[in-house]
Image (tube, rainbow, N blue to C red; front, side, top):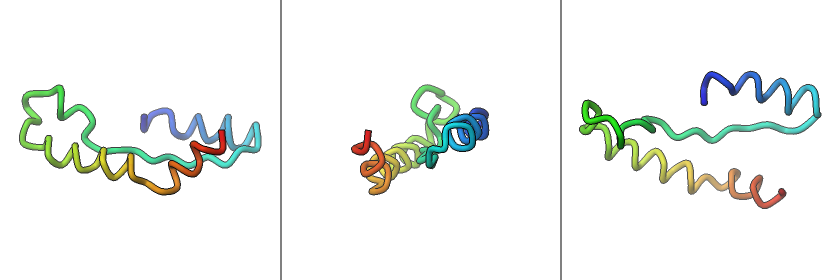
Length: 63
């Protein structure tokens, strides 16, 4: 997702005049990559924080 954030902000924000904000969980490949197995608890916690982000829910309900 990091590689498209700037483009999305440009297209949706500057071009279309929308407010753009991102809530991005970290370590998203830890659940699929055996070499990152030790990081899975951190990945799960990060995903839970992203899902619980109050602003994200408010933004999503606007659409």
